[in-house]
Image (cartoon, rainbow over all chains, first blue to last red; front, side, top):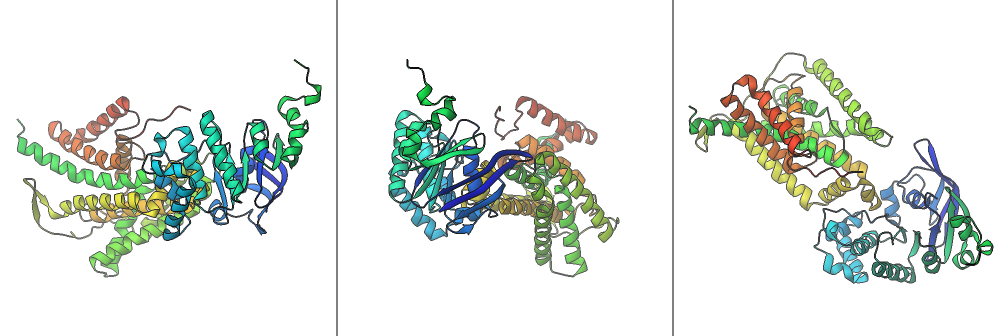
Length: 240
Length: 294
């Protein structure tokens, strides 16, 4: 289980996240929702160790708050960054191998074979320069790179951002499939309806604070999302 | 009128001088490409290499090759420690791009003063590593100068293999491309930065050692090469390894031919004039990538 207790994040002296506490059980697909600037990406970066935090983060019983990003990857936490962030001048193969940087040579090659079997679309891209790929292909590589470290928790920061509708469907299928295979998934996304449909648990952020959490079906049935995004509960909407 | 043979001799001399510029610029561009840090203390690693080799060879009495290896490894270790103690802590703070410039300028002064206290201000020299005259492309050259060019070629080959084909090289390229994304992949970026800084310093030390027989060893000997190295890095393109190598050779040749056409007083004017022209026509340098607008 991943657990955050009263986690706050500061960029220099500027606070962007206040006392966020949440828990994601193993094997669950969870999403973080919220309008722009709510702190969705910051939560994922805090868990991955990419921003300094105040508070307590534990993963599978171990406190990881003071661990480096590399140590957290070694503990099984993987992150696919927003806008893919591939190493554009490197090949797809090199991007994937960097994803498995902490694995020993033989294990890395074996993992590469597992990941390209899991995501067969990667095989035909393997020698291409990452910067030359389409958005959908890049997201496929980014997910493959995230999987290379053998994560037990995979976080995805806006995985559908900038993708064509066809690529969105493909990425959704991949994430759903990974969840069915037992991988714990935590993602954030602007598409509220799709996020609620894909996840079992939802955490709703506003202004850097967690304002609601629960089963995605319950969140979808209530008015809270409508209120956070549009300022009015669904029940008060004027009929067209 | 200038004969073709004389001009050719100047070009070959320029290649020799340029190889030293290239060796210094390679380290500088490696640090910039990986860490976005302008290292003003780079010239002092050049100086430390020469002094450590002098001490190991003439003070301790080690044979040439072990003395050179001890000096290079010594500078590598000193650079890694200095990086961890000064630059790394600054890089986690806002405004680090300026504070690291100040830190490396400070390091430069501290290292010069430390050398002054340890080795004194007396100018010293190493004996030639290789004696004799060699004929290269129809030009008579001291073997020591040919050794300098051969060393640069060997260094470029080794570095290319390191960067293109090793696990560390892949991590270095990833960190240079996007340090945060490399961190998210499990790469220890602090270790990559420290190692890169150490390798760059070791290259500067190597340049100082192989040049020590033909220039005077003193605490301030690193200042002129660092200025030339900055010119080469800008000429070749910040962060570009091929740019540093070719920029170094180009600057060396331009200087040598410029001196022949005009006079030795015009050496710097011709070199810097070409630099201004290149930067005016191609601001990113000969091999640099254009800066993207925000």
